[in-house]
Length: 103
Length: 418
Image (cartoon, rainbow over all chains, first blue to last red; front, side, top):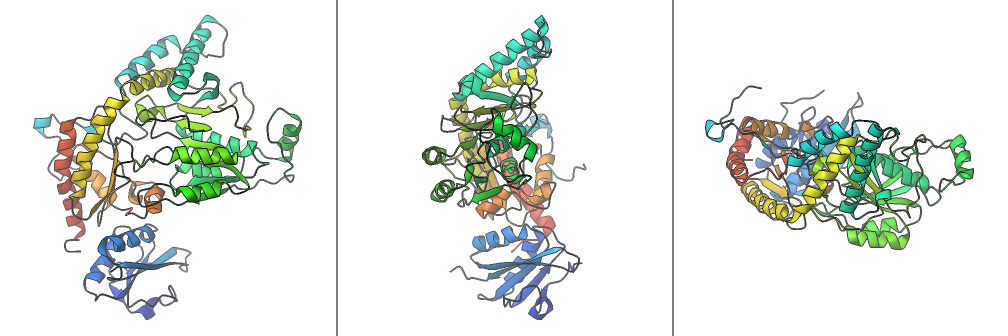
């Protein structure tokens, strides 16, 4: 159900998961357990410019707590968390941050 | 478990295991075993029997209740002994909900109460059926209301938010408990996971003015931090202060309306009674613990400060919980990009038993609801509760081992430079 080695997807790949949030980069960490989703997100953030909207997709419920905490520690702004269900009923959270947005 | 890292059981420290996970299951107090064994010899019989052996067990049990009551500042007849702390919390929440059904069935609780409180508040009330309603209506029980026949509704629990230190939002808590339809308010004395003390005195004053009973879970506090009389229902946990497991303590002021949601028994609160040796050991160790509490407070506070300093100097590590208004022996921190289970394993191999609120260390995928409510990292979490047996050397060695343990876990995850 997951693509563990996925890096950044184009937003179109996952438009169904978070229709309201216009992310510039989406990190797919579905099927991975914390802290891996946060680590994948941080790796994507390292290569992105300030102001970038970055989303991470996770099936681990801890991500919805840990991504905002990571953003606070790194000076990014937490934007939103959306919850949806995959076809097999698995819950998926999309957590979005804006890089450097806390300044 | 294979030993792949340096640090375990080194010859110079004699391979001493250091238990830093004492919250809710402390290393036995030196008097606990002695009291327990003595009560096994003298109080093994059923205290309900009328022969000499039974009466001897009864005397030990009565003495234990009396002594525990004195430690709590309660009347002996208001103290009830249970098989566990969880049983205490379940019974207290459900019986007060049942007794106050005319007032309503909402429970107001801080978002960081123990799961046993939150779960009992949300559960359907057992034993509520047309038959029990009818019996209650002509019986001695309090609060027999005109509830629709056959309804067994899940309770509504209102979880009041906490700040980043884990302290409940007091104005929000007071506003919630003074609104209509509240059966019970629950506020822990201190949070056992992060150590933060709660504003119990203020909450008790508001609850009293509103006529709502306040349940204070002192399971992490009693024996460690002064617990005064600001409660209507009090819960305490002997295993947390170093007694043997197998007993819990409940105290209920006579003004509190309650009704059992379980079958009638000679012991109205906890049918079947309690282990007499466990009760006796709880009483003996509570007395001893309260006698040197102040000295232990000062000693352990100083050791905790050292751990707080050492943890805070590990890169990307947050020490969580209130730095000052806290339990003297508890310290919790979270390390960014660290797998909690792996870190517990690293420290275990180095000789240290620690707790964790990270999801991967629990039986569920959900991480600690306490850390989540505080908005702090739930991964890479380490919980420490020092015991009276924890030495300065133990803490020094822990502080020396910690940075390397975190670094090894991070290195395995390849997170350098993030």
